[in-house]
Image (cartoon, rainbow, N blue to C red):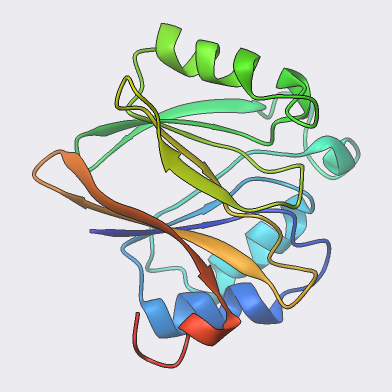
Amino acid sequence: MKVLVVSDSHSGLSFMRRCAKELQPDVMIHLGDYFDDGQILHEDFPQIPFFQVPGNCDRWRVPDATPEILIQNIGGVEIYMTHGHLHGVKNNTGKLIAAARVSKCDAVLYGHTHRPDCYQDESGLWVLNPGTCGYYGGSAGLMEIADGRIIDCRIIREEDLSGNV
């Protein structure tokens, strides 16, 4: 199962659309900034299950009751999703990682910094920031899940979309 993770689109739709078209994910996740971009992505690919959280720029773009943190089981993997601004990720990811561990998640996904990052920490928790799909040529995250575990997690850039992914 392939999971496409995008964030911080800021009205730059072309890279995330291209990722969805070329990677043909089984699930898509948009981590905010701009929430309506995620809705457009979902409308473009309605057959693909879709999850989304708002970012700090989405205050007036979403209904008040929209959760800013979402924990979802995808393919047997518990995933903690948030934009990151509530956890102060521009300073460090300590609070975010602690929240994901307390929630007993296997992966934590966040955005907000516009800097892609992907690693598995010493406890086995996968930490993924897909960067920004709307600026700097674009970046996204791709997780692969099989048999209830993450078997691969990486950053995707423009040059990766030549059919070799």
